[in-house]
Image (cartoon, rainbow, N blue to C red; front, side, top):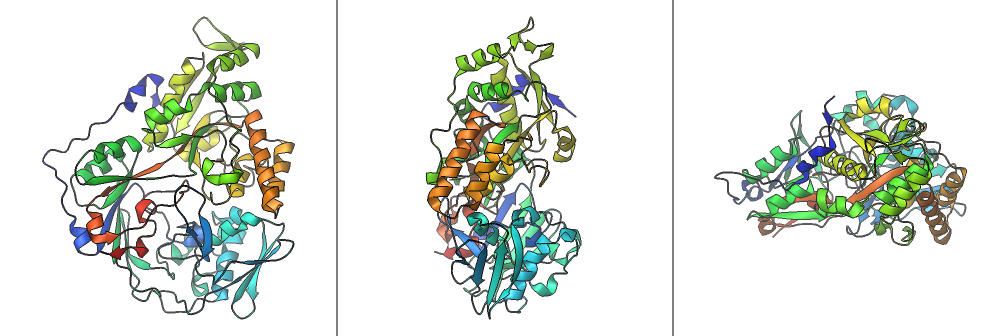
Length: 536
């Protein structure tokens, strides 16, 4: 494992993009009713029941509901395959959803309640090992109801269950109940009701073609190609010297391309946070006073300006301002270097002869791990290490894959990102702060193993309340509890930056961006609803 020192902060300097002899030209793809996108990663599976496009914007497999709004606020969750909002029982335990009539899958079969039931049952079945199973932990049963309806029955009331209705629906005939997701034919041969069908899928590219039988008519963009290029700098060079329509890039690289004629940068606000875990088993980071001091010490705005080129907002808890009335504007950590140093001094962490704080023979030092393929996480880790050195805290920065990081989560910090299903405050918070996690989920859920009865009670109150005022009060309290005893050191909600050829607007009437989740890339940004683009 390669070790990087904090002195490598020089990587944060602006990157000059050179492309000798390159010039922005009108894309041949646009003239052919095609859009060619350069992506940082391709999905391992195209199965919606295994998590592919599971936030209501599926291009192959559509969901009961979809997202409607802009990037500045929580979008509305509105009907797609459903014909109207769910009918919820008085006590909030029974949700009845009626399907739209006349919708067909791309193979010509009709969508019916059995397809919805089979899709949700497959996800819940422990034999399938679906990564979406934990999102349905409160779902007791799903069954057909009436002539064209589906009934979801919950164990407890949960208004945020509506986010679970953003999962793509597959034909029941292609779902083998009990079959592991890894063996499903849907992984490589999906069939859905969406505007696109699979054309080609291999190790380096994914190509979608227009669904000629789509209920709303054949999409104007008749082919969407995604070509994989993992390296940020390589994608930058490829965009500068080729006819790709667009790509996703870190803010600084995107800003460099924006200075070239023929390119535009599209920025999407997100609920996607970055921050480090503070291990409960580490002698320094397990100390509650240390965790609080770290949150007061870090200058989040400096990191946003330096690493993100301003493309982000400070993160104090897991709730961004876009959550409106649920956001607690007073639950913040003011940057207070003097108070942070005093707290460390008072807690017995005193400066040693080498400038590093010591308490009972234990040095104030820890390691931050970052995914080696993610330059943004690397740069955030280095910037944090540089800041904390001024407080007598030594932070080493190491690269580690997620598999390598998992066994080290108890003793090393990890630069994490989150906000996988951020379209309700409950789903943004619960897994990161409830003591039932990470046991109930993955190791990166509540990675600091934070446990508080008061926090659990507030989270449960928010999850099970059916009145908006009660939910607002509960989640405001959650944020107050968090800033008094933080489990992590959150840094920023990052804006997702995309580069697109500006001549795309000569051919297409495009769509806007949404408030984006942690998972992003060329499936999102200005191309999230590419099936709705129209010709100029």
